[in-house]
Length: 353
Image (cartoon, rainbow, N blue to C red; front, side):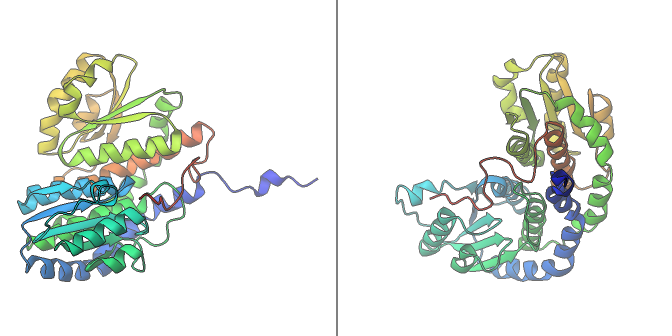
């Protein structure tokens, strides 16, 4: 009798392979994508946009939130996240003269992204698509396009496209302000060093195999990481995971945290971490099971954690912060007997309207 199980694909092998590709993807963007990004940034900068709007869904929405921080902190311009339904459902029309509208999408195929971008261009906006598919409908309707060069992503949970979007958006904002993007030059090597510590994450995953819920928190540049990590955990492990800004967590939701509540804190090494410190103190005071992703001294003061490389500029730390959290989602999913390559009820291209 043939043992059919011997030929069954290993659960999670596609996601694992794509997580492992991330250092090479980051290097590809720096080597091949950066010159084109600089050209686009120079062309947009010459048109002097007054403010920036960002449009996205899902994982790309978390990348867009990261870009919002970059625009406001590094570029000194107001930035906001759009509500696409105001255009697609309500038919609203805004005056977007001198506004830069950046639409971020892995596939570039969702109808509401395409429709809202087309409407923005008709309303006078400078439109830029950031996708992993230069032949997509979104790229076609946008005035400018940045290819994040991640290569085909086959696993349903987005991993390499997310970090590719982050790096492309960082280089874009650097170009808009005339920077050289030097803070990113060591990211491929650093990412490889973080991913090589997978055994540490596997041990950390043992804490969450039977978890009923998770709370994630951060501030500043780390907050998009908390949101993306929560999304990855929910879509692969099916554990309800709620992300909070540290400031928002103190405004009421802290009451649900007790000594059996798992909390994952992403602690930036910089001003975001300083702003998060009162939250960490309150969590420890409530006896929370606190796991920290961040500097070594913060990990040492927590129940457990994963120390990130020191000396990395805060604005690019999110590209490294998410890596152990992707691995955590993968490991918890495997431990719960599920396949992270094929979460239930998910499709690679989500066609919202």
